[in-house]
Length: 296
Ligand code: 13P
View 1 (cartoon, helix red, strand yellow):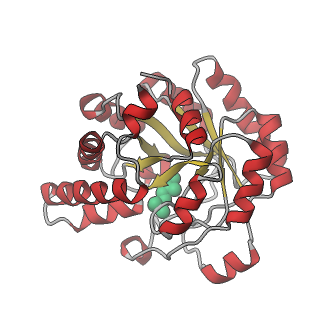
View 2 (view 1 turned 30 degrees about the vertical axis):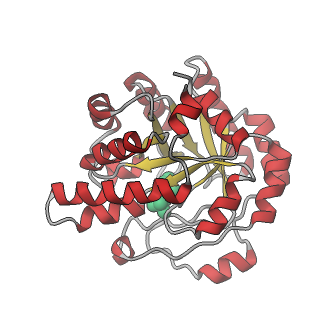
View 3 (view 1 turned 45 degrees about the vertical axis):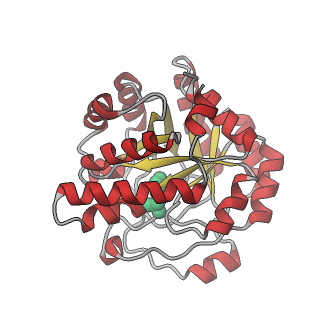
């Protein structure tokens, strides 16, 4: 077994991707792990703060307990997703407390999301987390730019967003950010959007996002660290596959498996739906066999 840091670097080098599956409902975890085992595919099991605040994952500790029951270190690693400095309701978060609790609960990697701050403040917060996590050999992910969608009541004209590139990660800023913060993996905004977490859109099909591969190529060339794509559900497959050749080594997927789970008439039905969808996702991403390849 390798550390998640080593596994991610290897995925980056080999131009393959590690999907990270969000768990907004606890029973989703078992079929996700089982499908990864079935396909010998490596993936992360992740929970974001908003999933215990707005959905049903209860707490980061409850997710860690469930992971201890069904996780499998050959095919999975436990990741703490989006701990915002300012949350989707514009409230300040005690992010160091969440990060420290996650480290204590056995999470192997963490994300600090300072994307609602200005560049300087974002660097300061990320550096604080990097300095802390370094002592536990835990890699840190951060976000620069605005992968929109989590904000409630958000009105979005996707074509306009993509055309103007509003909120997309700036390459020069990203270089400064990466050098000064020491971040291990960077979430970049190049066209993807997060699935909705409130309102009617929670149950609707997501917009089919596309990616600015030229921008991604520039970011990859300048940064040389594993890049992360959030809002992974519903991105066009041709774009996705190109992105793996240009720095994207981690792909966050939430809405896709949440919606098929919620369609189940019973929990068991929902779990069967997740298992089936997971097998398709593994095939679409062409990652069968990556567990043995990346994790020995
Ligand atoms: P989707 O829900 O759009 O797949 O995004 C998930 C995500 O980015 C979690 O961080």
